[in-house]
Image 1 (cartoon, rainbow, N blue to C red):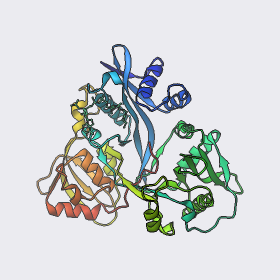
Image 2: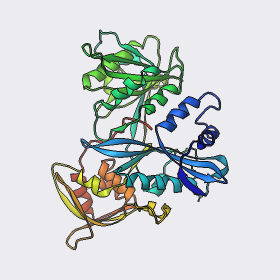
Image 3: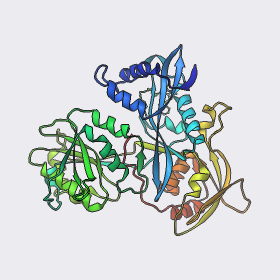
Image 4: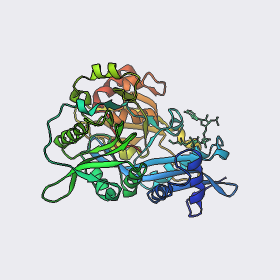
Length: 409
Ligand SMILES: CC(C)(COP(=O)(O)OP(=O)(O)OC[C@H]1O[C@@H](n2cnc3c(N)ncnc32)[C@H](O)[C@@H]1OP(=O)(O)O)[C@@H](O)C(=O)NCCC(=O)NCCS
């Protein structure tokens, strides 16, 4: 087994794996895969001369309470059918974390295939995301009189730019390469976008992209809604409502700071009537993404939480260590620290006698730091231990909105 950087000859072999696992149709998707490769840094595991496992890394940033932190997005981890359960995916993903951390990334994120696997590499689960399915005709929003513009796959640059310039809240992610948006647009031929431009400059200011299950009557999956001001979100909802004479159901992720149910006429009744059907009205909650801190000093120094202040010792356990070869510069972030969290936060190596101590895994600590779960709740999980007093103090300090990635990958 050898782990190395991607070279051109790996293209067909990794593509074969993606076909084996059902991520690509054998004939049709060559372009999508090409753009995916172009947008990523790739490490491969060679087994008997062929690339049998790989990890794709994409650069971006994550909004931590208003501060943009460099992000390593773990965009795809795959192992071929003939090389499963040999530890290949674990080793290559850990190595990608080490390389990206050494290159300055402060945090890593991913969409998980299942809970538990990436915890072994130090990841912690985000909060529930809500995906609402409803009849667009039931939307209660003011009518927008101006007609939207059509958007298609050829407009990927413009839409990507609009995504990067959108209104961003705590936890929101940007992925930098435009090919990321381009591949999203190419997945389904029937996909389409609608949006609005600035009347003076012509610049795209807000839009959504839809991937229909069935073009004629839906369901329509809204893959993203992008806007710079809250009132633009209402204009996008109004556009969805205008599709409601024909389309029976749309599915949409709830944006940060908004309760979508507020905009629906009779959500409970609609849910009862549609239960079990193709056009079922419901609100699905699922926690499906994970984060982990790569650079503890970098993250703590960028933590500005006005209000209370707390100082404590931290004994941090990083399970990624055992996956890493000793020659790598970055060996995880486990160790002993003392830190202060508040309007200005700081962290130093070593423990101090007079401070209470928190013992935590990196995943659990990341969850508290992001505001995904309060310390008192994490204290029930086993890999997050401190006195009740310290847990309650931490609850009071990490008072922040729930993080929302607002960009699935
Ligand atoms: C997920 C995938 C990459 C794992 O590849 P792999 O090389 O077989 O994985 P590893 O050998 O590193 O790890 C397998 C081990 O993790 C364990 N594991 C798997 N899921 C787990 C979970 N949810 N929680 C804890 N452990 C888990 C397995 O039981 C196995 O342990 P064992 O060898 O002791 O039985 C591979 O199954 C795959 O390509 N799946 C399809 C694509 C996919 O879903 N990729 C992930 C995208 S996020």
